[in-house]
Image (cartoon, rainbow, N blue to C red; front, side, top):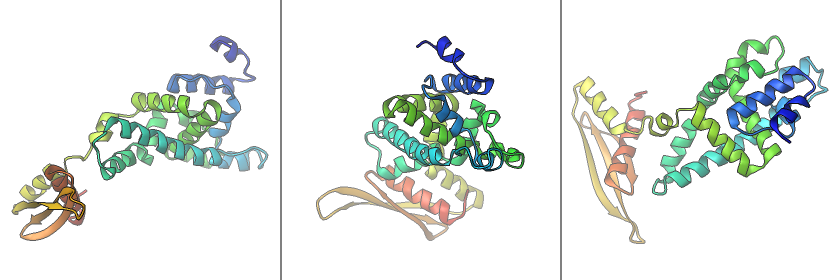
Length: 240
């Protein structure tokens, strides 16, 4: 069935609008539009507009959260074959953060599609990321994991600045030097190689900031150990 025939079968303008938005954002024509209608129905609408006679998007949001996590983890695992678990976890947390999902949802026009009651309507911008997660859940139920992964990555590439998210705040060491310069204090890294009982080599680094041990980190290389120590020092110094 081609897109024109799919488009014509919808019962009302809302169904057509949702279909068009999903195709534009994800490049994946929905097969079961009712899944996406549910994904875009906030619990306030389910309760106060439909009197509990229509499902909210909460179950799909729960599922979509897991699907997004798996998709982004899969993507990072393939893209960064040498990255450590901690590095990938930090990148993933930025990509799937509520702030980023709300921004993506806004660019996709999800706030305009989100069905709420009058009171919740004022919070559409802040709850649209939840609805986006529900849409990921709908995609999975409708199209399966393989197509959902491709559709999700298309949306992330189109509506999220992945390059910035992946490298954002990665250079903790430079930020710490800037902080030391601003406070006019001495900064140094005491870094040394270590060996585990099994013979694996790694590095341990301690940040000395204003003559005090301020942060400690380790990693498979000197650079990674110092970045980890610098991140810990920034946190201990309450530098945002």
